[in-house]
Length: 562
Image: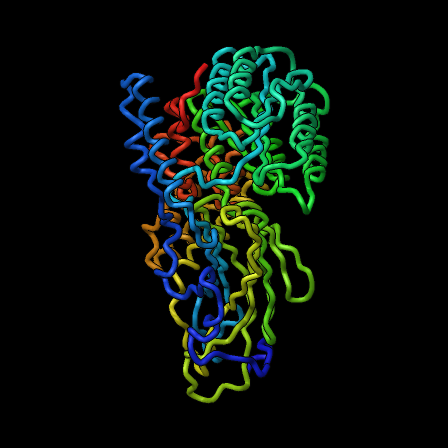
């Protein structure tokens, strides 16, 4: 017996079903490749909706709007009829990379994947969602020329059509200083008309003071005494901070203060979504600001044609939040240990105990947390013991606020079970866990390449990616995952990162593209506009639906009378 293996009288289960007999339906042990459909996300009825809402481009706008009104009325009636009886909004599963690892094998550790998957919005419609509080901070500095500002105005019109009377909306414009254009208020018909008039009056002026925009946004969103469950700030800019605080460190600190002001056990968290239009904004700064608020996102918008779909994608997310304050706790079982939790937000509470906040989850999203455990060496095993004996190596607990059922769920617990037969045999790797382990390592490789390139070591960065692509091909082939949608996107993004590093005009903007790809796979969330010919496996049905609606300029809400 190797000295590396702790020896312990470990508990075991005679049957894979035993440990689950008392668990609620929301928790499922995932041990087979078909137990989870992800990353092939099941869509709501978005395909049907798109046929209904999105007519041919040459169709006149009036017909499109009538179609939208009729469709939304049908959805509303369906919603009222069913009264939305819902199951818990999250499914929860825990799966080892290998279900069985022989004691006499050379393996001392094993990866485990804890998967949290959000449900669809009931009925596939938006009436089931939680009400939202949204503050939009819009750059109106001199660089926001007429065409760009007009697109933003149209985008805000579409946003107001998406909001219901229980939602709140506020608008801030900023140049040298920030100014409240629309106070934070419920979105009834009268307030909508007032907001539309304020939007139409916006004009360009002066410099870019991002600090003032963040400060005033924080004041506005935190001033609401009885906030809605979902609270977000959208910051839209096309330039660098050149007035007020201009240093990145100061702006990140200010954003952190903004987060702390909104942090209260009795109020929902505030997320910040930043949009950088064109090549001029400090994209790394905007990305960093969004990351400060957990669940925030950064959208790089290369040109005017992508403005509206980027905004629509973000709106589709916050209008489909089904769970908040999602928290995982991972505890090593007796005789095992936690080698590492592969997530930057993981905090070690004590020996063998880690806690990981996952923030908000949108409908249809998944979060896959990979961690590594040391294998136990049970003394209760007999020669020739059946591999059906499953030994718990860790317990994973999930708790969250279910926004659809208005309740706190959890903690729900699941064990990470691995059989330890008295032989050298290894079971075949779990395909789904292998793919997630590939994703985790891809994020780490892109992160290292980004740092190397920033330090001027571009050739080393290229070598890092080339070597990983070779290993990536090998491991994905071994489990027959070459055609998996996530594997295809990971490989495509790695190849694109390599192409970026090979550019002769490699610069800070190109460097940021590596960071955007890294964040996409790290957070498992789409934060990009719709780009022709390009797919994103993390774009949910709700995000896709609204991104396309905004791109068409039709929205998905009812027509407003002006």
